[in-house]
Length: 145
Image (cartoon, rainbow, N blue to C red):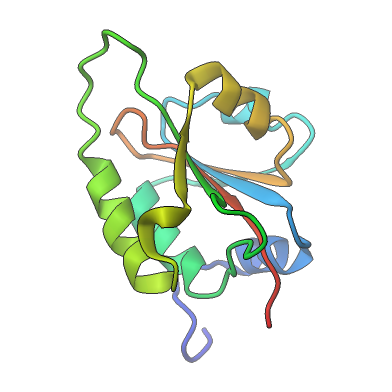
């Protein structure tokens, strides 16, 4: 255990976050996301038993978002005609508002297949047990100033 570091951030996850460089991305994926398929060229970390909001909150306490682009946070858009509940996005907004000086202006949405294509480029993918649909998040790393 470390002082001031969330116990949610395992040694393996901290190592991955430290290894990532400026503009590298990490996906925090819900339980339905094809983490192993999308993460074929990435490090895939399992965080079973945890949801996306708690992991997002822990990561953003140590992870700088890319300050050189407008939208370093990407969410998967709901497919047109799908009425899945996306209220989890409100939790993401609250977390980002607290941890990011630019607030929720850093969030964008990507069409489902565009999100998958971006996921394939990720440095790492975190597979969670999140049951909410469209709960996937991509974070782009910035620099510590």
